[in-house]
Length: 243
Image 1 (cartoon, rainbow, N blue to C red):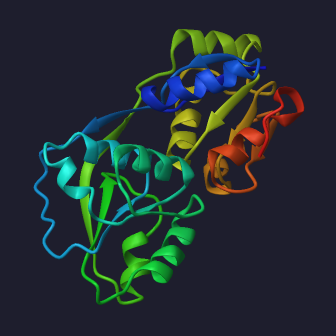
Image 2: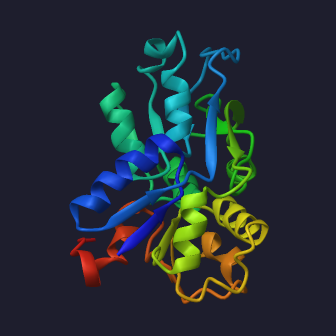
């Protein structure tokens, strides 16, 4: 299958290699670009743990001059991909949630204490879900540090437009509601409305699938759990991915 990968460039390149190894053709067209803010002032005084809700949040931490000084803190990762990256980066104490804010909140409640000190949430300028509100309702103190910005693309690439219009691109992978909203907007701007009947969408979560309901796609497939393994498992019939 010819798949459209819409992730930011660094993630897209890694994903493309996996897909190609399983026999897929890939067009990469990032719907977002990531800009880090490594000089944002942060204090480690009294911090109980780091909360990381995306791989880009962790990469933003790794871009800091004082990164090595944070490695001693426990880190709570939203899912397996971010947790694996944290371990590779040198964090010794990594707790791994199941891929969404709900499971992250439950993990924090199980592993950490409300009176153990503030939790530092490394975030972008746009956040999904109310992690801060959910934890503070349970007595935790959460500080949000904005260390990166995800900027949406202005247009689809000519190759993507041609591939979708001709039917060459048979599927698109979408990891968030914001990326799905951007995809819909850019398809409309490119004059592709009414030309998406041959395209399947493969979505990380039901939330990511929401903006796609009325744009005339062939089908919308949602991962059984919000992680990349289960997303890629949607491709099993043709690729042999295992969940």
